[in-house]
Image 1 (cartoon, rainbow, N blue to C red):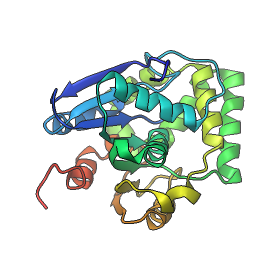
Image 2: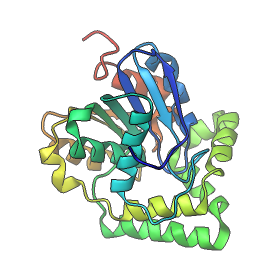
Image 3: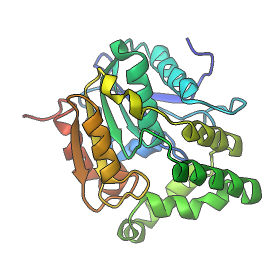
Length: 260
């Protein structure tokens, strides 16, 4: 068992099939609130705060995806889940892909939202830029750019209370935690391995996502045998929050929550 003990929450069906939810950078267990009422009817749902985020500790960095994957399996172990479906957003989706590649026997299905699987130079530079901002201004210096990428202007204008909550959760991220995860992201290199993925995958893209474009996610789906792809219109990077109802419909059949 991994010796890093992360903050985690279990809800839903105590003896149901497992579903692990893995968050994007700068977010917490609250990221999945729009899905919980639906998911808890079908699964034992386990949410957790990534290292350096929310109420989880901040181990000394830098971090790697091998570490983040081990953390996620450690959360499963602590909740008695030998196997689980895994749904992620952004960093959490990349962690989910790493889980499926490392131990496919433990991962039933993967919902991969708002992610990429490789690290081209502009992507790597973007994380170096964020690390530089933290050094100068702290975590608060990243908020404006983050929320602008995460959610469409229309959503931000219509939901000030949600934005305030998300900002509060964002500010729980430690500089070391964010920076450590940024270093892991700079080393992202799963694209070459996707043709060997043995776990069924659904890739969900947001039409307005500039960080993980629909074209990027379509290419990932094409590289992954037998995978499915869905596009959610008028959604930024955090699709499940920006267009919750459409997102829930996109994942429903794949996760066995509605009729075929």
